[in-house]
Length: 138
Image: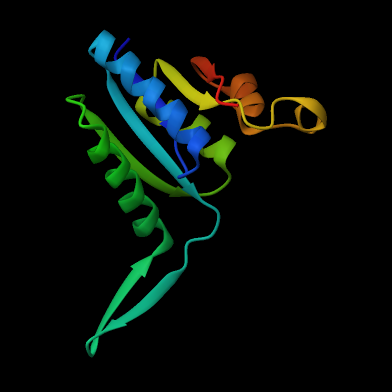
Protein backbone atom coordinates (compact mmCIF):
# COMPACT_ATOMS: atom_id res chain seq x y z
CA UNK A 1 0.00 0.00 0.00
CA UNK A 2 1.55 3.27 -1.14
CA UNK A 3 -1.15 5.95 -1.26
CA UNK A 4 -3.86 6.58 1.32
CA UNK A 5 -6.46 9.25 0.63
CA UNK A 6 -8.42 10.78 3.50
CA UNK A 7 -11.17 13.37 3.47
CA UNK A 8 -10.92 16.07 6.09
CA UNK A 9 -13.18 19.04 6.76
CA UNK A 10 -12.22 20.39 10.17
CA UNK A 11 -14.80 18.35 12.09
CA UNK A 12 -13.68 16.15 14.96
CA UNK A 13 -14.95 13.07 13.15
CA UNK A 14 -12.98 13.75 9.98
CA UNK A 15 -9.92 14.50 12.08
CA UNK A 16 -10.32 11.12 13.82
CA UNK A 17 -10.40 9.45 10.40
CA UNK A 18 -7.34 11.47 9.36
CA UNK A 19 -5.45 10.38 12.47
CA UNK A 20 -6.26 6.75 11.60
CA UNK A 21 -4.98 7.31 8.05
CA UNK A 22 -1.75 8.79 9.42
CA UNK A 23 -1.27 5.84 11.79
CA UNK A 24 -1.71 3.43 8.88
CA UNK A 25 0.72 5.42 6.75
CA UNK A 26 3.33 5.40 9.52
CA UNK A 27 3.00 1.64 9.93
CA UNK A 28 3.07 0.90 6.19
CA UNK A 29 5.45 3.59 4.96
CA UNK A 30 2.69 5.02 2.79
CA UNK A 31 1.93 8.59 1.71
CA UNK A 32 -1.27 10.32 2.81
CA UNK A 33 -3.21 12.54 0.43
CA UNK A 34 -5.47 14.84 2.49
CA UNK A 35 -8.49 16.15 0.61
CA UNK A 36 -10.73 18.93 1.83
CA UNK A 37 -13.84 19.89 -0.11
CA UNK A 38 -15.43 23.32 -0.38
CA UNK A 39 -18.97 23.52 -1.71
CA UNK A 40 -18.56 26.97 -3.30
CA UNK A 41 -15.25 28.74 -3.68
CA UNK A 42 -15.62 32.42 -2.93
CA UNK A 43 -13.00 35.13 -2.86
CA UNK A 44 -12.92 37.26 0.30
CA UNK A 45 -11.14 40.55 0.73
CA UNK A 46 -9.48 41.19 4.08
CA UNK A 47 -8.28 44.66 5.02
CA UNK A 48 -5.50 44.97 7.60
CA UNK A 49 -3.74 48.25 8.37
CA UNK A 50 -4.66 49.72 5.01
CA UNK A 51 -3.53 46.64 3.08
CA UNK A 52 -5.97 44.43 1.21
CA UNK A 53 -5.58 40.68 1.02
CA UNK A 54 -7.65 38.39 -1.16
CA UNK A 55 -8.18 34.85 0.04
CA UNK A 56 -10.44 32.11 -1.28
CA UNK A 57 -12.42 29.51 0.62
CA UNK A 58 -10.17 26.88 -0.98
CA UNK A 59 -7.03 28.56 0.32
CA UNK A 60 -8.51 28.91 3.82
CA UNK A 61 -9.58 25.24 3.85
CA UNK A 62 -6.13 24.11 2.70
CA UNK A 63 -4.50 26.25 5.40
CA UNK A 64 -6.66 24.60 8.09
CA UNK A 65 -5.62 21.14 6.88
CA UNK A 66 -1.94 22.14 6.93
CA UNK A 67 -2.32 23.38 10.52
CA UNK A 68 -3.89 20.04 11.50
CA UNK A 69 -1.08 18.07 9.84
CA UNK A 70 1.61 20.22 11.48
CA UNK A 71 0.04 19.62 14.90
CA UNK A 72 0.29 15.84 14.37
CA UNK A 73 4.10 16.06 14.18
CA UNK A 74 4.22 12.93 12.03
CA UNK A 75 7.14 12.15 9.71
CA UNK A 76 4.86 10.83 6.93
CA UNK A 77 4.99 12.03 3.36
CA UNK A 78 1.79 13.83 2.45
CA UNK A 79 0.03 16.06 -0.04
CA UNK A 80 -2.99 18.31 0.36
CA UNK A 81 -5.72 19.19 -2.10
CA UNK A 82 -8.55 21.65 -1.59
CA UNK A 83 -11.23 21.01 -4.20
CA UNK A 84 -14.58 22.57 -4.99
CA UNK A 85 -17.51 20.16 -5.34
CA UNK A 86 -19.51 17.57 -3.44
CA UNK A 87 -17.50 15.55 -0.90
CA UNK A 88 -18.26 12.01 -2.08
CA UNK A 89 -17.66 12.69 -5.77
CA UNK A 90 -14.47 14.65 -5.04
CA UNK A 91 -13.07 11.83 -2.87
CA UNK A 92 -13.77 9.26 -5.57
CA UNK A 93 -12.31 11.39 -8.37
CA UNK A 94 -9.21 12.29 -6.29
CA UNK A 95 -8.70 8.58 -5.52
CA UNK A 96 -8.80 7.86 -9.24
CA UNK A 97 -6.49 10.79 -10.03
CA UNK A 98 -3.76 9.77 -7.57
CA UNK A 99 -4.29 6.02 -8.01
CA UNK A 100 -5.05 5.60 -4.30
CA UNK A 101 -4.79 2.19 -2.67
CA UNK A 102 -7.16 3.11 0.16
CA UNK A 103 -9.71 5.81 0.99
CA UNK A 104 -10.29 6.55 4.68
CA UNK A 105 -13.55 8.22 5.78
CA UNK A 106 -15.43 8.60 9.04
CA UNK A 107 -18.77 6.95 9.75
CA UNK A 108 -20.82 10.10 10.33
CA UNK A 109 -24.44 9.76 9.19
CA UNK A 110 -24.10 6.02 8.54
CA UNK A 111 -26.66 5.03 11.17
CA UNK A 112 -30.42 5.44 11.52
CA UNK A 113 -32.48 7.38 8.98
CA UNK A 114 -29.42 9.12 7.55
CA UNK A 115 -28.03 5.71 6.57
CA UNK A 116 -31.07 5.09 4.38
CA UNK A 117 -30.86 8.56 2.86
CA UNK A 118 -27.14 8.26 2.22
CA UNK A 119 -23.84 9.46 3.56
CA UNK A 120 -20.45 10.39 2.22
CA UNK A 121 -18.92 7.13 3.46
CA UNK A 122 -21.70 5.07 1.93
CA UNK A 123 -21.46 6.81 -1.44
CA UNK A 124 -17.67 6.56 -1.49
CA UNK A 125 -17.77 2.86 -0.55
CA UNK A 126 -20.10 2.12 -3.45
CA UNK A 127 -18.17 4.13 -6.06
CA UNK A 128 -14.52 3.98 -5.02
CA UNK A 129 -11.83 2.65 -7.37
CA UNK A 130 -10.03 1.08 -4.38
CA UNK A 131 -10.63 -0.26 -0.88
CA UNK A 132 -12.39 1.97 1.65
CA UNK A 133 -11.82 2.06 5.40
CA UNK A 134 -14.76 3.49 7.31
CA UNK A 135 -13.46 4.60 10.70
CA UNK A 136 -15.83 4.44 13.66
CA UNK A 137 -15.73 8.01 14.88
CA UNK A 138 -19.07 8.30 16.71
